[in-house]
Image (cartoon, rainbow, N blue to C red; front, side):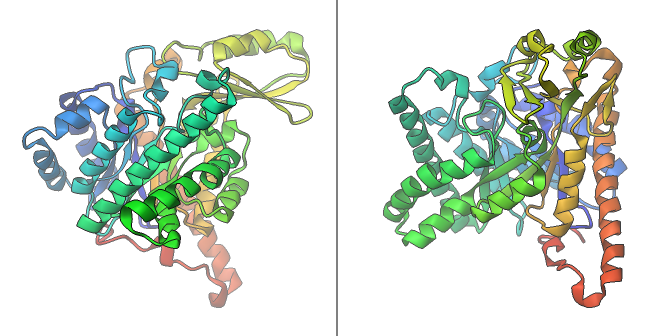
Length: 437
């Protein structure tokens, strides 16, 4: 939905099972009109659209895309962001590391992503930027035994393929006037996991390879080629994933800004957290509570912090539980997108405070207008945490709205005390186009 403070807020439809376009549209019809009625009756309501490769192909058949566009207009809905990370099945099967396949070393990933961009170009309202989140290039464990030459090959091919997408997005901009950016999403065990690795990839691979190629293919100057790279390849800041890297939002934002890397979308998500008792013998009860979240569909990497601040990473929760009695360990953070609206889970906690901190920072520096709740684990939550899906989605969005408004009001009161000459610049909060009218 469009919020008064200038943000577009929605939830990612990857929470709904269904890989065909028919299944996707059935879910959109079921969930979005009622949500709009409850949360945004007088303003347009945004959709965070997830299309599998199959659904993206089917949507372009016949007149289906135009029919979908008409339906969006009739319902007062709009698409401003898409999730292009999961290529294939994401529900009712073992996903685990297959979520990274095919990776950015393959042509399949390029074709899928460009197809999503073409769909976005048709659906995106005039005067608004669009974004498509994507995978962090590849999956590290696939490459851990690879030699240096193999690793270089993966980075090289990934950069070259991303530049192909930049060329397509530049062409879309030229033809339609619409800016669409690809938003790389770092995550645990991804080839890119944190801000340091993202910055290194831009500096050592994407920028040098891309600048040369774009000068040749698009006839750009070197400066314009570099600008195109940083305009069309941005970052999806998934709050859960950065919390798992123990990166504080303010520090991550500052490092990315210094490197010139823009944040195209913030995915509002929380990781499962557990503070480990000093007495390792008392951790059995904690282990039982954590084991409830060890399920077979998704990867649930665990990042452990010890007394010295050193981090140890486990590939999945099931494996990590074998090491819960490590004497020096003090905290676990688990890649499980738990609901935002509560910080307590049967004796466990979440990184909800990182989400609140990100929303606070946005009041000071509006790095992006695209906010997407990505709590997608509803169907694999322990039974006592499962609720009606519609109500769960609504409760997540209401928590975000309440948190934003609370922080916005607090900042305004602070600004009044500082005096009119020191009031923060609000220009960044202006509504794109006429969406806020």
